[in-house]
Image (cartoon, rainbow, N blue to C red):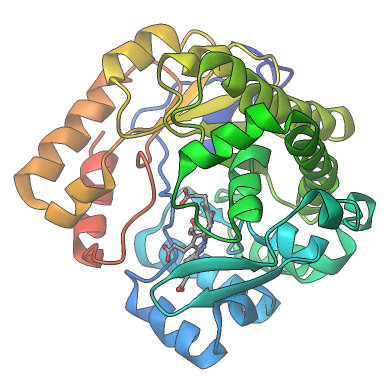
Length: 352
Ligand code: CP3
């Protein structure tokens, strides 16, 4: 096991933090990516009241309420701050909007010219409502429920900034990384610089641990993966740990395949979240010796429910028995997930 948090045995901190400190618990603690969101009727109701998604993110009372909804419903071991990875580009000066059914837009797409106008040093001031959300959640949660902060990893955030929204052609971004390395590396450096104080401010508002989402790490050849994902994520975690050494950092490099081991071996990586394509036996063998493992269950199994979900959930728990493991999905819940299947899944995992 890596990192300064390993020796820390904080028995009052709740089950998720105990596992992040390197303890193996049975049953494993659990939370879910996108546990707050459109599959929950109570979320849809508040979202309609708030108007837009951004209005929800920037209203601490509403955002805290949305954060707490799934915890109240299912008694999970962690709440994850309700916010979005695209708030940083928004705060840097790209206007973020969500059109009905078309995903996020960032206007205008970043260019070498507009990049020079971004002031990473001004972050986190414009994101102050997010920290107020964290404070409100902490005040409302029992001490045994962990509160997770998060940010996007630089490459994933950069893909949205460069494409002006969801990228339709990842190959185009890869081409840009080769053709204009100065521009792409400067963008990544700006995001590293902006993300460190953003996460520290979440921790100071009482986030117990933070997760870095690199949802678009997939498909990068090893040298690009090192340059655009491994090294920048490590730099963020190192910056956070230099300031707040006791806070665990969870890495989620989605689609990184066998390269997951390179992240898990980083001294700054306390936990690694695995996506749906990762072999659980491989992860147990190659990742568990180096970091806490989290995740793995296909969110579509929770849409299907029934025996298919139950059998796989039990197999996942069994695979990591004896290792520090946090039950979670391989990616977020989709909007069509029946909330009652989630309740059943929680029961299965809690049976241990
Ligand atoms: O419950 C939670 O997981 C906490 C909140 C959270 C959201 N987004 C809320 C959200 C978190 C951790 C994120 C992270 C995020 N946002 C990622 C990384 C994780 C991943 O899913 O890969 C990414 C890539 C984004 C960018 C983003 N935000 C996209 C592509 C979209 C639109 C896609 C979609 O599902 O519609 C969003 C919007 C968004 N962020 C929603 C939620 C609940 C849906 C907004 C709505 O209510 O319409």
